[in-house]
Image (cartoon, rainbow, N blue to C red; front, side, top):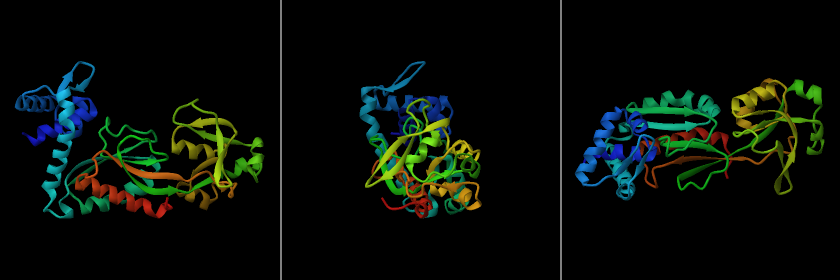
Length: 299
């Protein structure tokens, strides 16, 4: 059985697309299709139903997929087993929030690639939650609550949060001293789905957290726009402290309601390689965890 054909099969099954699987593997679509045909011929069964609109697994394909994943992972492991850390090779596709990619990962990526010169890293930066399996990512950094997806998650800790406003905003609306004073204020609302919920301000109360409805004149769906709106004086924001340090230190933003932070945001790395991922995946997961560690609290 051809290992390369198994790799193509696994990727086509995960992405439900010959075109996207071929792109991910660096093949032409025609070559990917030939690999699948050869695999089906060698096994004597149909693995994929193909239509002009979709690709889906047959019952035989569903039975093969988990075994094929294990075989591909073991073959990848064997290919680098005796080559030492610098022998890691292959392509890794990862997804991170834009701020963390630009401020933490990309500045340190040259040293990681210098240690692993045969690796190729494809970095996606977006604030939306990508579909790790269907979009073909090896691992993603998740900020916030995890969904029960059945994927493997390595919990790294939590990001401490801070309430911020611009000096211009505070000059206009005053400095709030407690959540009870927020009736005279407004916030910048952050939502990936516009109109999904009313704007609220979350704050610590006793041993838990409460949410208070607060007026909002603008809603954004990206971290960059969230910060820009706050700098423009459009309202108070609640954001990870690590991303606000420079603006707070320069005086561009001012911390408010220090005693009323919102709940820390959990951080995790999620991957789709089971409990025994390939060494190259483990290497990049460990590296991201080390980069994040100084900015997280336990929990």
